Image (cartoon, rainbow, N blue to C red):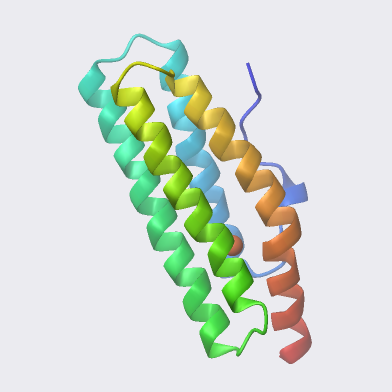
Length: 132
Ligand SMILES: [Fe+2]
């Protein structure tokens, strides 16, 4: 089982973004814990809805920060966000059809988070730090 938990190596140095990332990891972790415990289908569905809605909220937050700062890589960054949302929708569909389990979803989400945060979000945070 993948160890899904916050680590300071994911810090990008922007308090608001870092805070939202910590909540995001917490929610992904909750899905992975639910995968290994006996949970009702309804509870699983609610946890997945929470992760999805938070991802949507967090991406809009970041994109608003980018727009305000005239971040030149906005389009490229937004494309990665949109990719995650489309892929997550696909995963949720497959979960509802019992093709994959909760672990599959939490692992996928966490792998994407680790890669995206240490690459794309770090570039954004550095740009913001230089501007201020
Ligand atoms: Fe991002």
